[in-house]
Image (cartoon, rainbow, N blue to C red; front, side, top):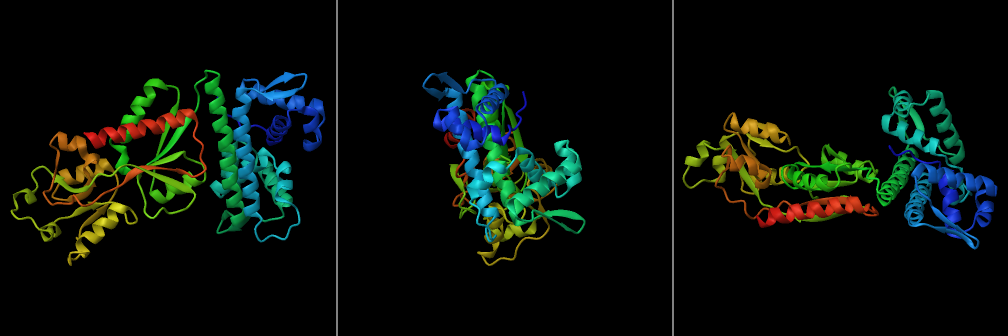
Length: 405
């Protein structure tokens, strides 16, 4: 069954009942009658397919399932409260941030996310399968509630304001917590559902990631693995917004933002690669200047490998090579090298198969002093599910096998 975000009010009802272990004590806090609270909890239990409370004469006590959900709902509300606080920075309001929270609805936040992502009410409408009038109404209600402008028209598009972007990000992270909780609860009920979304960069695609995915699928065949290929800046944005779970690939130093954590898995040296019968293999006493005579296939600017490439010649008093092709496509790199005399700067583990099959070879120019740290990047406050934690462990095992090979 596909995950559906529950009603925020129902989640808040559950939170108060769980914390106070009592429907009667929770009732005045959520402004609902006791029958309405019972009904809200029943809807949550039906949605999750599990009981959340053990009902006793002396109170309501969370089940193991309920405790999983409680931790996730707590984190969900913290994300939203922080998002509201940041969105209202500089606004003249005497209302406490916590007082806005009970007034938010799932529909309002889904509309906010969709319009912010798409910069269009019509595209957001199709994505959510809601009418544009419903989206406009939800957006206006949210603006009136918070007292801020969320969207502005500019150059034929709908542009989110900084307040909208901050609150949208918080809402994504909040919804992600509940989705994580749903997957954990499903696992407790022996229902294997869910997905892991990985942002993948070139340095990890050819060995570590495939090995981990193949091993993971043997024990978790029903968990969907989604691999997203994109430039680092895009992947980092999606990670911080909660659109993807983790990044795998070349690490950045210094760490670009303080809300992420990087962990090194392996740090292989770079090498210069070419087709197996390249003219440079016949050059005695090979010098760096000899490499200027050939075209190169290099990553785009802003990547660590490209930064090393740019400094390699400059630091040795040489002009930069000409005839560059910028790409991170493994297939295109291989074909460009095979079809001519081009060179590339690459980590050897990326071309293990090409080296083993004698398709490509490493030019005998020593770059053993270079290290390209490869590893995982996650949000600092991310709490992986046990299934996600297992996948991370498999990545570490795959990297360990590579280091020892």
